[in-house]
Image (cartoon, rainbow over all chains, first blue to last red; front, top):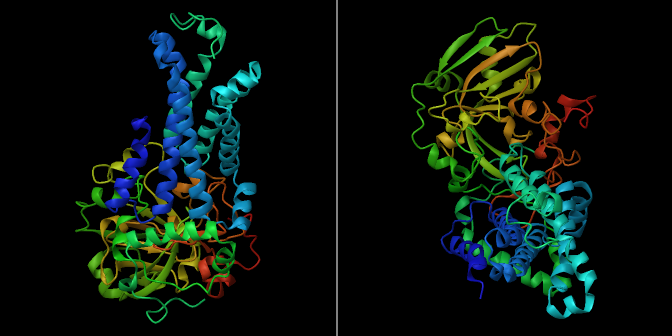
Length: 193
Length: 299
C-alpha cells in the first residue's frame, strides 16, 4: 500500500541477510530505525507546504500516512531500545530515562505521538471535532523534540542533526500565518494546518 | 581484577557467528516478552567471562576520526595508509631525547602479549590481545628530567592520508596526555600489534598507546611524537567538548556522561549488556594512582 515507507525496513532486512549490521548490530538497528522515524516525520510535515506550493491537493492523505509510518518506526526504535539493547532491565532503563536528557526527550516525543496515532482514524476525527485539530497540533512539538533527541546524542559534530533542525524550523515557520502570507502560493487557503 | 591471560579468556573460534547471535537475540526477545519467569532467570547473570573479541570485529569497527567518523568505513579508508618509514620523536623535558624508528623501538623495548579489555566511551567494549611494551621502558631510556610531569602524545598530521583531518570541526592533530606516574604504570603500554600480527592502520599502525583503565579515546593512535611537559596537555576531546571529556577519562560507572550510559556497556559480540567496572576492572592495579583525587571533579 505504501511500499516506499517500507524501504528502510527492507534495507535493514537485506543488511541482516548479508551480515552488514556492523560489529555492534543492536546499536546499528537502533540508529537505523530512529533515522527512518525522523525522516518520515519530516516528510509528513512537508506535505502541507508542498501541497500548497505545488497546488496538488491530492497529496493530502500522505500527511497522515507518513505520520503513521513515522510512528511505526519510532515504536520499533523504542522497542529495540527497551527489549534488545537493555533487555527489559528496568533498573538500567530508569537510570537512562532519569539521567540522560536525550532519552527523556526521545521518549516524550514518542509519548506525544501515541494519542495522535490512536485518534488518526476518521471516526475519532469526527468524534473529537475541533479538539481533534488542536490535539494534532502537538505534532509540531514532536518533530523538534526528535531533532533535539538526535542533537543530544551525537558526539560533538552537530552538523548532521543541525541540518534536520533547519528543515524542521523552516517547515514550522511556514505554518506561521504572517510568514506564510509572504510566500506566494502558500497562503492560498487561509489557516494553515 | 588481574590483567587477563590466555587462560582467562575464551578463544575467538568458540564465538558464535553474528547471524546466529542475532537470531538468538530475536528469540530471546520473544521469550523474555512471553515469560516473566524467564526474565527473572536471565537477570541473575553469571559472573562475566571475558572472551577475546574476533579479529574481524577489532579490525572493522573502529573509532578513528582521522579516516572517518563512521566506524565501519575506517578499515576501507585506511587500506593504503603508509606506515613505513615511520619514526617517533621523543622530546621535551628529557635528558636523552631521540627519534626512534619503529623497528628499532621493537628491538630495544621487547613487546610482549597483553590481553586487555577496551571500553569505549560510547558504551561498547572489546577484549584485545595486544602486542606491546610498557611505556616505562621507553621513559627509562629517555630519562625525564625532574620538571617533567606529563606526557603529551601527538598523532601524525597528514590531510592527504587522513581525509578526516579536513574536517575543521576538530582541532587536529589528535593529542592525548597522561600524568607521568600513569605512564609509568606497568599496564600502560605502547602497542605495535594485535593477535600477534602487526597493527593494521585502522587500529593505529604502526604504533599507538593503550591505557586499559581509561576510555578508549585516551589510547591515541599512529603516534609520531611523545613530549615530556610540565603542564597538563589539552587533548583533542577536551578542546572539542570540555564539559564531557576531562583529562583523566578513567572508566567510571558512577560518573555519568550526558550521552552514553557509563554504568553499563555492550561487549562486542554479546547480546546482553554488562555492568561497567570501575577503572574497567583494573581498580586493584591502578586505584592507588588516584588516592585523594576527586574522581567526579577530575573525570
